Structure formats: C-alpha cells, structure tokens
Length: 357
Image (tube, rainbow, N blue to C red; front, side, top):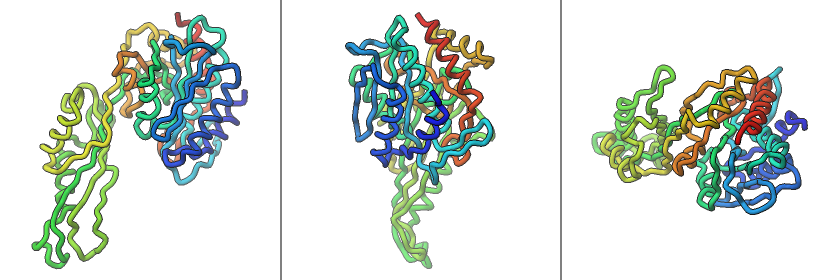
C-alpha cells in the first residue's frame, strides 16, 4: 500500500474540531485503508465521531489496542509538501502518518494473531479526548495494553504530564481613560494575577520535568481605547507532572481553590486530566523497546510534556504507552513527519505484535 499517497490525502483534510464533516471524512479515509472483513463499531459523543475496529464477533477485552487520533489543531493552510525525507503539513507528525501505519499494521496482522487486536480511531484528542477515547472507555472498551501512535521517534513514552485548562476572570470599574484613578482596570488586575502564577511556575529556560503555565489568550469586552476596562479574562494551559501534588490527585474544587489563593481572581476550570504513567518494567514495554532497537533505534524510555489519551487508560489501571515515528514541529507551520522512520516504525510494530503473548 502506498502510505505516502494516503498520508498526503489524509493530511490535506482540515479535520479540526469545528469541522464535523471533515472529522467524518478523515475517519472514513482511514477506515477505507483498513478495508473490508472487519467489525467496525462506531461511536459519537459531543458531535465527535470515533470507531473501534476488530475481527468479527463479540467485543473482547483486547490483548493489545492500537490508538490513533485523526483531528488536528487549526492551521492557516492544510497544504501538503515534501522536502526530501520530510513530509510537511498540519497533522503530518501529530499524528496522521502514524494513524495510517497503525491501520495498515492492524489490517495485515489482526486476522492472524492468536489474540484479539483492536484499532481505536478518535477525532477529538486535540480538544481533550473526552468524546473519543474516554467515551469509548465509558462504553466498556477495555484492553490489557495500549499503544498510542503519537510521535516519539520510536522511543517508548511511559510518562506524560497532566492537563489543567482554566480561565481567570478579573472585574474592575469602568472609567474614562483620562481619569484612571476613578476606575479600576480589570486588565491590570489580570496582569498582576498572571505575574503571580508565573513567579510560582516560571517558564523554564530549557526542558525540565516541572509544572508550566502558558497564557493562551487574554480578552476583554472593552472596545474603546479611551475607557478603563471593567472586565478581563485569561485562558491558561497548565501542564503538571505526577510529582506536583498541588494538582495531581486533587479534585476540581481543590484546584480552583488553590489557583484562587495564588491569583485572588475568580477561577473557572474548563478541563482537567491526570498525568499518565505506565510501568517501565511491564513485559510489553520491554518487548516494544526491543522491537525498536531491532530497527536501529534506541527504544529509550521518554517522558512527554504534552497530555495524551493515555491518561484515560492510566486512570483505569491499564498500561498505555506512546510509540510513534519521528518528525518535528507539531502544531506549527513547519510540522513534518520524518519519512525515514516510517518503515522502521511499521516493522517495529509488526515485530512487537508478533512477539506478544
């Protein structure tokens, strides 16, 4: 199968959260790669489609489940270009090429393996994963071990940070900009609150396994340059490792109270996901490392700063790892998948699945 041509077709699909028709199109394209002869169980939650593919018969507890997401974050363009061994485009690395490899490997091996293998295709990982992987788990989907095809350059990711997405709301008093002492500037209050957070969680100068706070958006309803704004909101993305007990293991109410104590502002918690951890000594982890090394890659264990759907399995006591091809630039204009890693990635997956018991 010409995976390169299929990848170019899939990457060109603008499968963002606000385009439900394109989410369906991306899902159907990958299901076409899987082909006939399999049971396809379709799910839908929050307007987001997903699918679970298996050999015919009742749904089992899968010995191994391959997980891929087909949605992407928005881009200015969804054009696909090739520069030598780099295939550029939104979602090329994160993670449409890997999704096609997983589908192809499933198609090839699922009918012959002596255990149940599943393929889980979701379309909402970039917006939280609650309507895809989490929804399927709530519907009873289970597995002994999960391989998520996010990018890793054939390293095995056993740890990922937790995710906390919040909004800070500041209120003030409107006044004429020429008389600022008559008002209370909500934007300045918000600025001070963000400063307090960043003093507690400063932006690292280099990669560190620590909690980070990213300011994604600041807005106010004020539209006049000569008016003191009476309201302001900041959107924050917080990533935390398991070691940060200010977030790990805390309830939503406790986290809201904690952030309020740091900022003094009203806190609205939009999303919360626990960190992800898999046992690095698990036999499947060891087998996957060996399969990567057989292809000339390190197979090293890796910790990822981004949250992924593995956290939903971790919360249910299921070991899940990230294992994908190489590339760089995810979520950016120069995103690419390294084509030299695609065949080794496919071969490593096949070796791993054949060695599993």
